[in-house]
Amino acid sequence: MKLIYQLEDVNKTYKKGKVVANQNISFDVQQGEILGLLGPNGAGKSTLIKQMVGHLAPTSGTVCYKGTSVQTQTKRVAQEVAYYSQEPHALTSLKTWEALYFTGRLRGLTKEYAVKQTEELLERFGMQDLRHKLLKNVSGGQKRLIGIGTCLIGFSPVMILDEPTNELDPKKRRLVWDLIQERNRQGVTIILVTHNVLEAEQVVDRVAVVNHGKLLAIDHVSVLKQRVDQRMKLEITTSLGESDYVCQSLSALGHWTQTGENRIRALIEKQNASYAIDVLTNQHLPIEEYSLVPPNLEDVYFHIDDEQDRPAKAEVV
Amino acid sequence: MGEIKPAMQNQDLQFQDTVFLQGQEQQSIIQRRITEWLILARIQFTIIREAWVWIFIMACMFPLTTLLFLKFFTVDPTPAVMTRIITGNMLFGLIVMGLNSMAQEISWQKHQGHFTYYSSLPIAKINFIFANLLRGLIMSVPSFIILAMIGQLAYGIQFHYSWGLVPVLLLTVFSVVGVGVLIGFWSPSHQLTNMLVQALMMFVSFLTPVMVDMNQLPTILQWFSYIFPTTYAADAMREVLISGWSPSVAWNTLVLLLFSLISIVLILKKVDWRVEQ
Image (cartoon, rainbow over all chains, first blue to last red; front, side, top):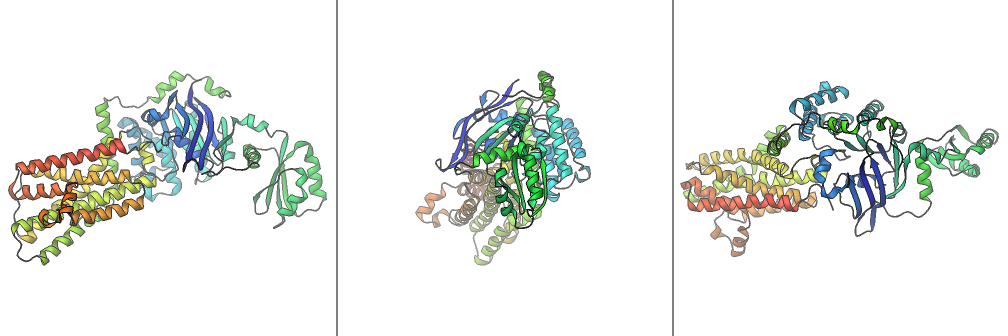
């Protein structure tokens, strides 16, 4: 299997090294896979992908695309890698069909093919009736879809998508995930940044967890899940203002994380599950409801992140 | 490194390479660049499509105001003074739109992150620059012509129209718009660019030989004047409108060509739009 990207010891710092965006990041991306980059806001994910598309030079280390440094072949990368960024759309003065059609033409498509793909995409997005509407006059979600469409038009062998499902309603999110999977089935290598861990779990082959500018873990979803396969997720909704008390009372079960105003969550050992249920039913704690379920990718992500959070953090962008 | 999912292993990767070439136009590099420029120019045109009336009003308002003010202020001006006032105000319109507006607009696009879209596409930077220059030309030329017509009517003089006016006009616009585009591309921050171009607009319009004669300026301002294309543009415009093409017009036109080329080369060489350090 061909390697598409190879990153070796990539560092990106600002203000003479005082602000660290990426620290010693190394990983490969193989042809035909979907790699998900997960991490909280400010983790350094967007900085990393900007280096992968050649929009940002690393302070040290190398980012290679098909064996050659990205910095020396930015034009080829632009030719082969479709990039969807979080930046505001540059084409707001264009009609929706123009945004897709012109992008297709700039990617080298013939007129006929650009028209054909524009029509297909507008139909998939359910936006045929909005074809003559200016992009600045459509909804935020529709703007996002057209932005994703500008990545899908043409047949780029690699797609890098920075939070493609942000600000989309569930139906449009489903559509975007479907489109991503369809493209991947055609052989497109996809690297995507997302906060939507639960939805990404259904789509990605491998996951890279990034936080504080560091790569915390990278592996297949199933392998990462093994890290917590001896555990169960216990999620509790407490009475209002009682979450601290409940956390203290159940501290022996594991490390509790506040996930909402009166919601707490912990990964507990499987062997302690029956004991936990016994405590919850018999100790008359101020609890509204609880659930005990196997952990999902989001829990794996929080688990990895929690493990790393315990040592002191570096200053990050 | 983990294995790739089974569905992918069965695919013929060479077949995929042909999939990626689907619909690609088979053109020579020159044809490809021309198509690219035409598309970029159409995108730039859409920016002015919606607001062309306001752009036109904006382009005419400042110079028309100063043109009429000078008409009321000057008593019995000589034809030479009248020509200077009219050409000076035509250039003022060009400075407002070609230098000020273009620099601010490109700087805004840059700091809003709009370049990310363009730099993610396989297009040549020079095409993007020329598409921006074309927009500057479209935004500036109408006010340039309208001011010439109104100026003639207001002062009751007749200009000499010749083919020599075409290169002078085009190179005047390109050299001034080129400076605006250069400032916009270079812009380290949008606020700084705003302040810089506002100050530059006033300085170039009123403290270089655009509205006034070179001899009326203090020596230090005369020296500074030589670094602005507007000095040569004002000379060339005035002469070509009074007496047609001459060696002096040719010399000034050549200098304007140099200014245009220098600004394009500086944008190409000094401003890297794809890679930030």
